[in-house]
Length: 103
Length: 203
Image 1 (spheres, rainbow over the protein chains, first blue to last red):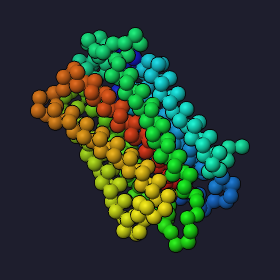
Image 2 (cartoon, each protein chain N blue to C red; image 1 turned 90 degrees about the horizontal axis):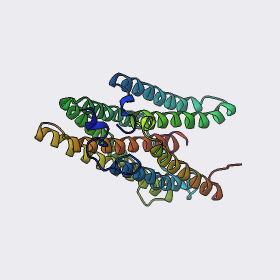
Image 3 (tube, each protein chain N blue to C red; image 1 turned 180 degrees about the vertical axis):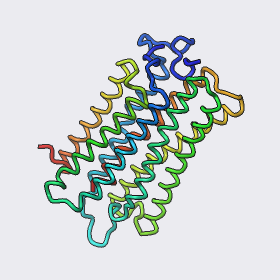
Image 4 (tube, each protein chain N blue to C red; image 1 turned 90 degrees about the vertical axis):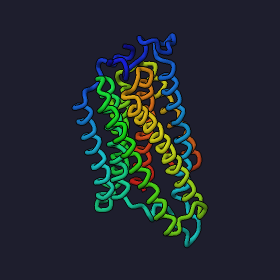
């Protein structure tokens, strides 16, 4: 079986991953509401924290639900290179147009 | 039977030199290219969301209902669980559970899309029309195209579920279709994970 499908998680593990995803979503929403009540330093930390939580959720779905962790490396390369190239392209565009400050 | 959902490489599938079924490889390449599509739409929204389009105009951010969108996001996230459970059930050869989880995924997707229709309706009632300003247009384009992807996913899920009902179970060839539809469905979910944070939570 190409791609190492024998190592796919069991239904119980999928449910555990879904619980983690739900907790991360709850943490994101809590951060959104906490932002208004904290000082400037806290507010500056909120955006990176939200991005990190979002990246974690993204990774969990791709790696575990889409089984990319258990697939051949070629598929990982296709997918991650697409994501990285798109991200870099748009970050540069946003930076050039002044919507994001990179440096 | 385990091969039904997890791979066709040994079952006379579409081989390539890579050892990966060509349809599966094609789906991953397609999904990779979708990053550019959604990236452009997200980029477009981020460019306009902070701009001033004159006094008296309405912005999407003023109308966001975060508790409502959070629940919608949760529903879509849980649909990824039901999708992977359908795939897993098929791998075990449990056709009944496969059918149930496919229908459950389609139902959760329908709830999500209904929520999006409700949100759009509320926004339009408040005066946030598609052409009121570029920020509103960018918002509707981004979330609308995402919703369209969800609708396509629901249709594909229903085709598989009804086929399973009609024939009493999915064949080996259709097993790969479940995997491919699953990949598409999870991708739609990860795009929403990004939209939820960049559009709704980071204001």
